[in-house]
Length: 301
Length: 325
Image (cartoon, rainbow over all chains, first blue to last red; front, top):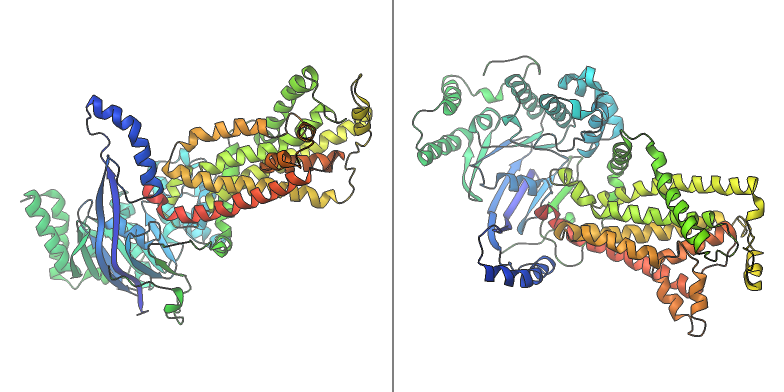
């Protein structure tokens, strides 16, 4: 049982979604003005009873899976399929409505880069702040400080408040800190979808290095390319449920076929990148296991 | 749902992973307080406190002295209105000292409560993206007003020293035409009259302010996540609280107002924990009468109840914070 680093059992998360903007009749409006506060108070304090403006929605239902130690596990799915909700449950940020999840080991989350960053503080202060928030001790941060600064490439801006940074610099700083905290489980959400090409390449390599060093990686993306590049195993979430789970190539091929069919795509520029990757995959041995040589070397995609 | 319940000891203890085992499942019944977790995350607590101090005074001219400017200006206004115009009885203490001694803990309470109440909301960018014990947010928000408290306490001490050096005659005197009773009361006034015991008692009275302010902060911050109405309620609560707290006046008028009722009014008045805290401060600093026993009992009880229920309510609510942010 315990060789699994991540485990979930019949995980479900229910949300109440509001439709407050629904047009109302004057009479309705007046009656809501009087009764809605009571309904709301009851619903916020007691829970369970949806008010006029609410509907129930399962963002995730019946999701059971496990990830072994050192595995790189990918999660794909269209927008709104429950990927981020699942990650937030695993990262202990959101509590599930039913079922449970277990994680073993220190978790480094990279849910939307830049979370812990404070615009009023300097680059140096921010490195410490976000490092500590991600679970590092100050002594460890002292040791890794130069490495973090170096990776981000912001030496000359260390004493500048973050609000004066360009958005790219902020991003580099945040990624650099998050990837240097040495987590045992690294949870990455759509991080690779932002940043310029060079930076993407660099971060992709960094994640590969971590994976090669035995860090368990959980990568979420709606772009299958990143997942095929990094992961051993993939889960395809659809409407909050597991649609397919297994070998990366097979699952992401099916997923792409589903996308093409759904949106009627025949020839596309966006899909091209992935087609190239597949050609490469079919030709050579799987490139995803190639260990990174150097973090900074720009390798061709 | 066939969901089995899990406990940490069901899991293999021989794991070589250094990190914690985290089980995330729906909570039932009374929440665990998990105060040990606060200790595990002390680095984070310290950093969030530091961040708040740094951010608060960035790009300000006066910096940390704002901590003292606020109560000092209120003191000047109060001294004019209540001291000079209304001639409130201060039992022989110069009015500026009398009111500042109350304003220093009151400001900590008011600012701390206001900051703590919105702390979950104002930290939502990290709360929605990373796990840490959520209670760190209100605790660190209150800790910031505690830092201000220490600064303004030093200013108060400097003012007392100033009075002792420049105008010692003003301490312990009453205005012309005062009753014999007031003259008698004023004759007991001594700076730090109770002796070295004040070194223990001042922290204890401060503790009452901290516990009640933080406890209310837990309540309000947890409620504020779901009901933004709290933003409108707090200024109102504080405004009323300022009148129900002996800041501009002395709590001795309550005792005088209710001499023959066995202390029930003092007890009710003391349910506001600041009554005892401020009375205690004035006792420690100027040897004014110690707060009435019924008030002290009520204050200690109410501050403990507020604090303990506050923690429980916060722990109970925190699981759903992110759903509402």
